[in-house]
Length: 559
Image (cartoon, rainbow, N blue to C red; front, side):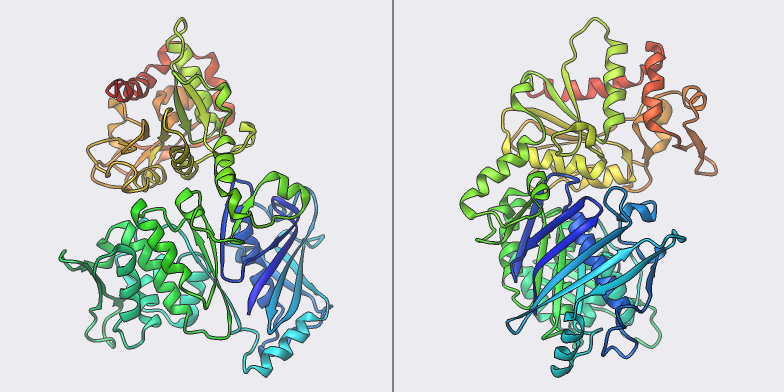
């Protein structure tokens, strides 16, 4: 049982689009914010609707006219602020159709999601057609019920895992995985995937990717008394350590394959594995091995989001989906012919900017968002009114229209990694806020492609090209905003370069967040603030000199 196509109507960025799918492997690329993650969200939402339509006995669906509702708080996997964000433009109805191929018969399962006229806290769920009932009959013939026949699993880039992980039952474990929080239950997945606790298959798969012997061991002695699961990992001749202490690269691979081992126990079912950036923390030399090992798994249907050209070039015929504006406007995204792979990846890079418009002598500075870009442009002009700017400031994202970009630390990382794939003659630096999110993304720049992380440096250089990632350097009066030995104890963002007086005057100064240390977060409207600062004098931008000097120093050292 596999999904042969999906059709989405009036859902978020999708007005109406149909996407034929490969039964085993689907590699999804596209511009930032164009709809790659939206496709994953659509699959999740369909699954939630599907489950809400099943009667309690798991054998049949409710009647088509039986009211079914999904409360707002169950839409945890959707990026939204209000129920209206579910729908495309101003519409109040969306539909998602999953076409399932089972024994050469296609079952078209269309589910509609409506906003009730008098409620903002629910989605009304309906289905159309006779295929729901036909599928229920077919599954019963195979000894399956509706609840245990279709599963969705979502893995995301893993920065770390929790130190203490309780033992979970299967239902709790499934819920965590469906939420995309599989890294919180990595020990439970390992245990459930191999009840005998020998982990032979999991060790073999991880060892293949790293071309090194990996040993995974269960360390609990008394399950009756111990509350937390204990798993250790040893690679080669290195020290055996708790799984929470291993590097993000091996943790990422273990997370992916522990999920596969867990779901491979469910034969004859539709198992959908959604993998977001499987290459995030993995050395470039290992990425091909990862894809080869994933491809060897034929029991499940894989969906992979990536920006990495190494993974794109590993796609076979019919496996690469390029989500772009042209396809969305035409209402159909079709697999890209293998002969066109190189031109597609080049197009991704060109979306960032027109090479004809770039002064190659300038340093391209990628910011987290449009307001960061604006602040830096104003700061340079205030501090150097007579001097030519050596920088070209660009907000992160890979949309042609820069005004449509909604950047963040993740998009800075993705953007500079994408650009590093295609350009060897440009000077590029991605600027991350020195807060928890920014530092985690800075730290997760691809190992083996960028210099190794060190707390002693606020930058990481591409090993072969003049491309950097940098977290914001701190002025002296903000030194308390970071702990130089911690990834997480960081609170500094670009607006903190301004004085407390300026931030208070513009209602941007938040409440203190620590008891004994004067540290506060930024609040208020950043867009309005970026306009407000245009009227300030040059003295208020003095602290920005630290950032500009740091950037210039990095590139001057290359000459």
